[in-house]
Length: 314
Image (cartoon, rainbow, N blue to C red; front, side):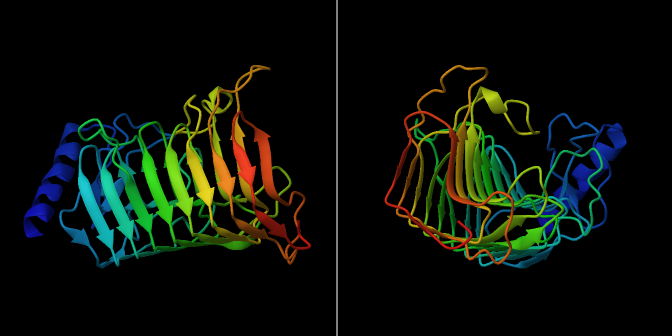
C-alpha cells in the first residue's frame, strides 16, 4: 500500500509541473487522468483511491475528493464490504475496467448544495462507462451485487452503466432515493447509450421529483440517436439486451421507464429489452404530476409481461 501511495503522489506532482488542465489535487486525493481531455464543463477528477490492487474493503471517507474509488482502462478490481462516502461526484467510477462491487455501503455522494455551476457531472453511487476490453473475444460482465446505496438530496443516480461494451449484472442491491426532491430528479438504476445489463432482485424506492419539468425513476433504460449529446456521456447508441426482472420498485414517480429514440419520424432499431415479473407499487404518500408503473416512450421489439403494478399512486 505504501508503494501505491508514493506512485500516486508523484503523479500528482507531474500533472502540476506540466501545467496541464489537470488541477492539483487536494490533500488525500489523487489524479485519475479522467477525462483524457478535461474542459471547464467536464473537469479532471481526483479520487481517494486510484486503481487500487487487491480487495478494497475499508471505510473510505472521500470528502474533498471528486471520486471515492476510481479504476481506469485495462485495470481489474474488487470491492467487497467497503463503506464509501463523501465524494462530490462518484462513489465508485469504473472507466473501461473490469471491477466487481459487492456487499458495500455507499452514501452521501454529492455536494451539500447546488454548487454544480456549468459542470456537467451529476453525482452517482456506482458508475460504469466505456466498457472493458474483450477477454478472448468475450465481453467481461461486471458484478454489482448486495450493495446498499442511499442518495442524498443532490445525488442523481444509484447505479449507472453507459456506452457500448459495458456489460453489468445488477443484482440484490438496495437503492433508496431522498424522497420528494425539488432539486434533482433521481434515478435508482440507469442504463444508457448501448450498455447491457441483467437487473434482478433489487429493491429501489423513494425516487420522487417535486418539480414540473421531469420525473424520477426506479429503473431507466434509454438510448438511440435521439438522445445523442443530451449529456456528457450520451452517444447515439441504442440500448438493448437489458433484462429487468424480479425487482421490487416502491414509491418511484415511474417504476420502469424505457425509451430508445431515433431522430425525426424514423423507426428505432430493435433492442430486445425484457421487463417481466417485477413488483411495482406507489402508495401516493408524495403525489407528483407524473406517476406510472411502467412508461414505454419509444422503442422496437421489447417485451413487457407479467409485472404486478398497484397502489393509489398509480
